[in-house]
Amino acid sequence: MSWIAYHEGVLKILGVQVGFGNLDLPHIIMILVGLGFITLAILKEWEPYELLPIGAGMILANLPLTGLTSQPEPGMQPGMAGVLGIILKYGLYTWTILPQFIFFGIGALTDFSPLIANPRAFLLGAAAQVGIYTSFLGALAVGLIWPDWGFSLKEACSIGIIGGADGPTTIYTTGLLAPDIMGITATAAYSYMAMVAIIQPPIIKLLTSKAERSTYMKPTLRPVSRPERILFPIVAMLLIILIIPKSAPLVGFLLLGNLFRESGVVERLSNTAQNELINIITILLMLGIGASMPADRVMDPRTLLVLFLGLAAFCVGTGAGVIFGKIMSKLSKEPFNPMLGAAGVSAVPMSARIVHHMGQKANKRNFLLMHAMGPNVAGVIGSAVAGGYFLGLFINF
Amino acid sequence: MQPTPVDWGEAFRIVGGGVLVVFLIMSLLAVATTLMGKIFMAREARKKAAAIAQGEAKS
Image 1 (cartoon, each protein chain N blue to C red):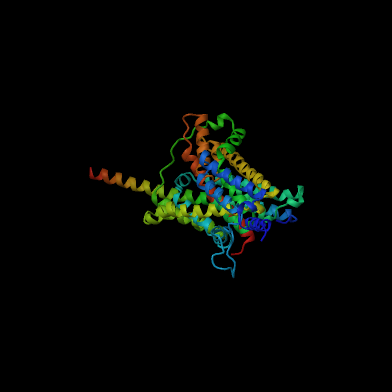
Image 2: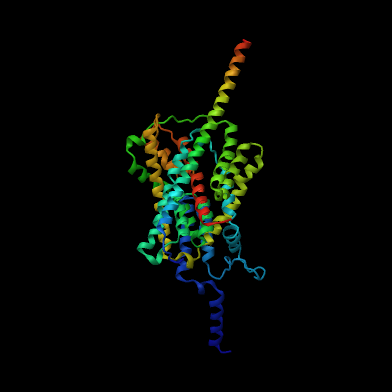
């Protein structure tokens, strides 16, 4: 073998087997995006539990030749499927069980007392879901302007649901309706949740006067008895699922987790749901979300449209909540701060904290946190209902 | 990802139905929770009144 032929052979092997030889610009960009997510998670602490594993999954999925995202296929040789591919296939695409268990953990972590003590907060949680439907229409309208980039009804539902500001609902709904855009919708939902402090205050300020923002409300709500806290998840579960059966995977698991918490008799199970279970599922789910974004799927002009429409959904949801809050403020006999409507988007507890801080800024006597937690947790239920409604239109379990 | 012709009639029906369903369910939950609260608060109040009455009877 000549010297040149030998080196050509070596280069060929390197081209086939070494990652560097197979890196292209789209993959490099996605790796940089992944690194950006990790940086934001570590330096800014923006939703670190979500953005860090999503960023890591994104990097791993875009490194060439790893085989990590190879999904199991019938007849595949043992060991050929990659771990991220297995998570994607069974956790997100075929069985879609991971988001439900996240909801189970969230239910076990959530105290619905502020909502039970102030049931009109349910209406604020409903109003903030309006953003979902406006972005749904917006996504469909894209096809009128750019026919090649138009979205289908199922994709529009998945984009709209970003406005619910609820990661698991977005993942579950998109996983079933439009798995191709699941990674980007989920990332958008978590990113916008992380940016609540940047997105919501200007909208709230735009729609309210300083006098409205400084409206004083008594800082405490009535105490909620244990039987009420136990009955609430049962009543809510039956009522919601009997009207929208397809919301059962989300609402059922959310309220089941809450029943574990409030019953007080299965403390170990509740603690597991609140800690180990939700942590394990978060690792799997977020790595899976990151891994669902290989460059060839994400490097598409429509990705930017999804991000924009998701942001619009979030903004419109916030605005609709505040406007509804203003209506309630006019109708209410007692003082009612209209900013509470902004907490109806289910970014728990960030939106509630934003409203609380803005309330204190406008009036130092104000302590709105408990009032804002009501619409905030109502938003979780509202977005799960909206997701279930979309699923009911297209999916027959 | 293929462009699909949009049936706007269906799209607006979906939006109308969605908004209606979310508000309906949340309103029903609000009513149910209010009723539940009233029942339990009345029960608490009765218990307290009974306890006070018992205390007064003893004294």
